[in-house]
Length: 336
Image (tube, rainbow, N blue to C red; front, side, top):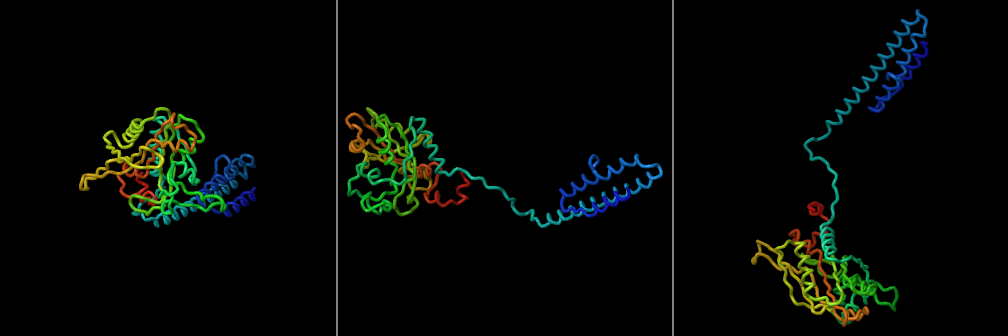
């Protein structure tokens, strides 16, 4: 029996304790009440001859004290090491925190516009960003010599072969009108969101890419008055009931009559207390556009709208430079 005690002592002394997990494992293995090796030795005392019991008990008690001392010494050392490591921490430094992402303000504005339009009965369609010349220009009544076809305005891509016209990065979401009317018969009431690209000089109010939402409503008896009512409803939902709109006559190849719509942007520091900011172009769908997609212009009328999401977001949040949307400055994005 003494050999069993010595074997256990050697095993105990050879056991290393380098962390709290190992310390707890040591306690359970050697000192645990239910499974510990040393308490199990105490259970054997009653099976020994009476004359051997005192010596055996003394040796087991000594082993228990040694195990407890080894455990206490190891834990005291671990605590000192932990305190020494904590001393290296500068408690005056700002705390670390995990940064959580948020929805980009342009995406927020886009989603709100689409949510409002769904309430007004519009479905959503997303067209391709790389378009054919026919969808982007010809079908929308752009003459061959129209300035918008100039390389200064449009990003052209390499054609697949010499016999094909080069594709373009869409300059507006209006090609979605053509694709929708090719695939569906009126009545049509749809919104087309997406990115568009133009080869423009970058400034505080223009960028080489931006976002639009296109509206198209085609049915029998559609009028300009219905168009204005939809735009007023959208503007009030976005900017509040006191929003001020201004319709100005304009020209677009694919609508006739055409108009541009401005929103009054209040600015207390400005000379006039604010300024007008253009947010969209609109008008009644040109009969030539209907002809290009085999929709009878004698039977159907419709209106089309192309609105800039960046301009909407700038008005909603009081942002005076479009470039901040694309700089990905966390200090700016963290505000949303």
